[in-house]
Image (cartoon, rainbow, N blue to C red; front, side, top):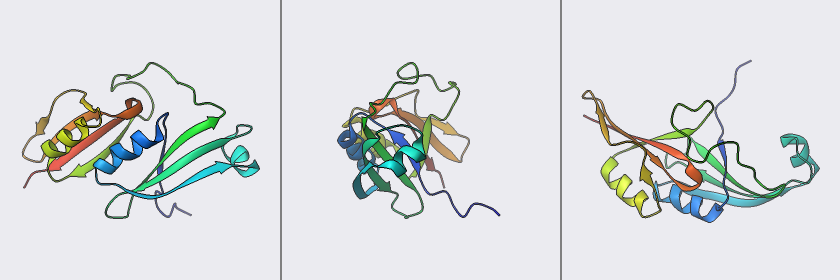
Length: 146
């Protein structure tokens, strides 16, 4: 038996509204918000007394989603250095295809995003960059060239 699809990627944040605004600026749509708590939540994540707010964001094509979570109990903890470099072990970025990378970067900067490196060109295929958004989340952007 194989998986059916990838349903969502979860990101724990401290400022849920800022994260929703940031990913909304990328063109993601807010699918809904909910408060998560109860024994089922405790059992699923392996913590006691879980209470968190989530916002589910959907890509415009409807194929991918991000679950943004703000933990109230137990409080979120930092797993390592803030703004770790790209070669840090573990999952640390989400990549989105965009149609105008310079416009997207400019709009994300209004939400505090900063380029991690610089806007680069890969052969005649892509223009690429990494931006650091809220909570230090690294978002990769790729504009396919014709």
